[in-house]
Structure formats: C-alpha cells, structure tokens
Length: 205
Length: 205
Image (cartoon, rainbow over all chains, first blue to last red; front, side, top):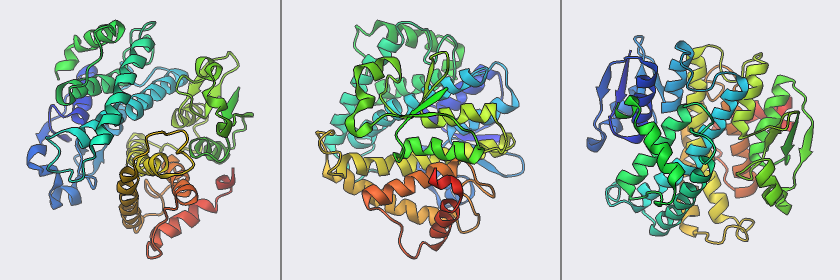
C-alpha cells in the first residue's frame, strides 16, 4: 500500500493529518503537482481518472481517490480513536458538519483560488475576477459564521475533534496562506479554535 | 421523528429515493421553499442554521441537516440493503463516486441554476452570465465523462446500485428539467443508465 500525494496541498494535507491522528503509517510517493505530474496521460489512465491527489494504491494495484474516501477507508480498518463520530447520531452530525465545511467554506475558497490567484491564471484560462470577489465576500461571512458556531463548543462538530476539524483547518490555512483570506481579529472564538487544532502534533504532518 | 422537506427539489429528493429503496417510512412535513418558509428566522434558529432542506427531526427535538448525513444515519440503523457499499473497500469506492458526482456534476449544475436561471434571478442579485456559460460547458463535458464511465458497468460506483446513483439521478433530472442541460443522443450508455435507475419504483418517491 502507498499514497500518491503532494505534501502541503490542501486535499493531500487532510489525509496526512488524519493518518497522524490515527497513528497509521503509510508510505508516500510524491507527485509534483507544480510540474503537473498528476495530469500525465499515464496518471489519468492508471491512477486517478480525475487527475487529483491524494490517491491510495493497494498492493493489488487498485486505486482509491478523494481524500475523505481514503480517510473513511482507514476509519473502517482502524476505528479507534473515532474521527468520523462514535455512534450513528454522532457520525451523522460529523458528516453534516464535514459537508457544510466543504460546500460552504472550501468551495468558495477554491473559487477565489481558481478565479482570483495569479498562480492559477496560467492553467485556468478564463478567470472571472467578479467570481473571486463574490467568493471572497462569502468566505468573510463564513468566518463570522464559524466564529459564532465556535462560541459554545471547542470543535466544529461538537465536543470532540473530528475529520470536520481536519478539513476546516486545511481550508482555513489554504485560505490564509495562498488566498490572503483571514478572519477578523475580533473573531476570537475562531482564532482560539485554530490555535487549538494547530497545536496538535498532527497539524505538522 | 419527521423530515422537513419539499418534494421535487433535488436535495430532498435524494432522501425520498433513499428511504423508498430501504423501505423506511418517515412522516414528512412540507416546507414551501418557493415561499421561503425555510428562510424564516424561526426555521434558521430552531431547525437548520443553513436554511436548507431536508432536515430530520428526532422526537427529542434535535435536528440533522444535509441530505447525505440523513441517509447515512438511516444506513447505520438499517444496514440492509447496503446503499453506501458493503465492505470497507466497497464503501470507500461508493464514497469516492458520491463525492465526484457532487463536486464535479451537482456543483456545476448548481452554478448554472444560481447564475443562469431566470427563476433564481430575484433571489441571487449578482448573477454572472459568464459563470453560467462556463458551467454549462463543464456539465456537457461531464455528460461525456459519465457516458464513458458507464460503458463497462451498470451503476455509477460499480456493479451495484448505491447512493451515488441516487445523487447522480437527482442531479441529472435537475439539470434537464430546470436547466435545459441534457446529454447528447450519442451518449447511449448514460441514457441506458438513466433508464435503468429511473425505472426503479424509488425514482417516483
């Protein structure tokens, strides 16, 4: 088993943090997305038809793409400590928050990246500046929303650290580091959450 | 237990089809999205902070939003027949395809709806026609992609009908019915799949 990955990119980082939290070691094989090694015909044909990272390869040569699908596979093999929730209701609540973070936070941050970053301009030929502007505003409002949500609980989905925190952390750092989108100073509960999850050893994975 | 829903809308429809496939009966309470009953302060405050449908309400008054989170909750309570895959690898493959369908198919169809439909113009004040155009093209390419994928298997995630088919069906019908986006006649494998999943009694749920 091995994982094709590019450390530092937001989607691969989810799996790196997840595995560190679980104490699972899997060999990594670096695929350089800046050289578009994940877009070669061979990679598309043999590894991931979508051309994305990360991808898990089993010893029999079969592949699994999509970061959360990979995490979920390891969750089934190594249930403890649970990072997708502990009982059906808790699992469903984690899933709800995971989806909210992805659809309402990661998606607009990605839109800013695709339509607003000079780094993607060469690849994305039809950038629309207005889309980046609209989504910057959506992200700003989402920081406010997250700050309100985190006023009465320590983690995104409740009392316990979960995969929803992992995805929120990767999105938050991606928003700040590559898109210059950061919460206001007054969003103190959101800042406290970020400090809380960033101080876990897994955050450096 | 009851489900706040608006039959016919694409996200609620996922849960209706899912429950029909499982043979689970849950009382529905209709919330009229055309009258924005899901956007009242009371609904936002008490039922779903995101203002979306469907939402599951338990007898103790707690709530669960996000269509797939609701399905997953019922899957944990009623595992058979499995609609999220049958073993860890199969479950992970279903999850991979579910995410691909949502991110690469539902998302662009939603963009066409939000930025291109006269029906949403009143609510979405800053429609960008170019976004609708870009996403129409993405959806067209995705029809081609799905047609190729379905050449060698009957269902989205493999040999067995799954929640990935449910989401793909709801997206396909939403694309055609409300956005005038339909596959080419030559996409015969995609048409055959649509006929296959639409002929199941659950599709009318």
